[in-house]
Image (tube, rainbow, N blue to C red):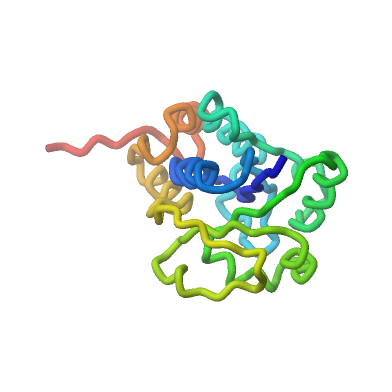
Length: 200
């Protein structure tokens, strides 16, 4: 079985993540896509990062009964930190020797890819499915022939923007699945203190 690994902090997971995953499932040879919730990206600041359990719970709520071919993977939560993709891939290979794993990344990630641990090993031994984050993604050169650009829609939603909206007391329902929004409200995540209603 060929499995696509969609790594991310998912802080929080949003409808854009799901749209991209559904599209890639439909137009690739992947059997499943696993959302690998990462504890901390070594190349990013931990600022505004919600607790691991919250981000895992929201991811599970987002994929629950949405598509049986979408899964949530928490393997990095039990691995040494910071987590590195190459170590996760090797661990998954040990646990699921019958699976073939491919990485799903946004086109903007190509810029930082050479900074990843064991970069040459990664790009030589694994397939990469690249989805566009901006229009110029179609003009980028790839490191090896194991990279392919998925002609997925460009999604103008980001977790950073969603956190900003929540902190301002605005409703992000529609940007995140209903169950995820309920979870954010219930636990007061991302500075949520209730919805501000403007006077008309």
